[in-house]
Length: 184
Image 1 (cartoon, rainbow, N blue to C red):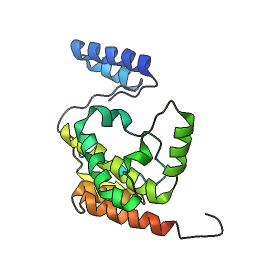
Image 2 (image 1 turned 60 degrees about the vertical axis):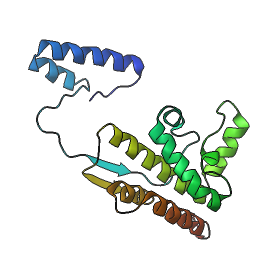
Image 3 (image 1 turned 30 degrees about the vertical axis):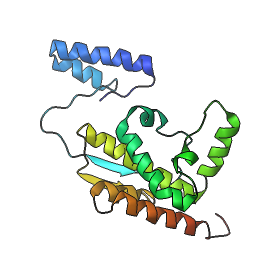
Image 4 (image 1 turned 180 degrees about the vertical axis):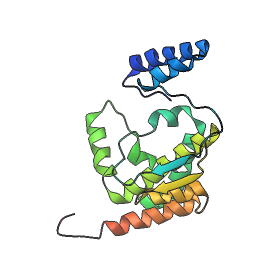
């Protein structure tokens, strides 16, 4: 694992890690650990996925992965199929847009702030990432979710289907818009 600040920092630390592997010198790994480069040996530890709540959404989240990873596209396609009757148009239309068009981005940002859109969008993102990680052999031994993230955790654990979770968070989001307190 490499903790890095930017692309040049990653390249520099990756080069050092390659040198340490070639040298097979444990002292080098101790030095690199202080620089944020870590190597693990032995049996793989347990893996936990933590799913965030509402507020982590942004316009064009996963756009690059959706364009290049069929698994991610398939999850968004499924969400579009399920959510179109509930939202009046595909969920993707609320998430993805022309990032070069400031008006379009501003409109999408406003839409993504609406709970009834945010919640299915975040769940879809969580599910797409979970499926992508599984395609690379990374599956959770433990899942946790904060607020809305509980639904992502339920889907990842197999306790709730993606379509049922989407319908649930859609209803949850709609009902949350009717809740009013003195200090929202």
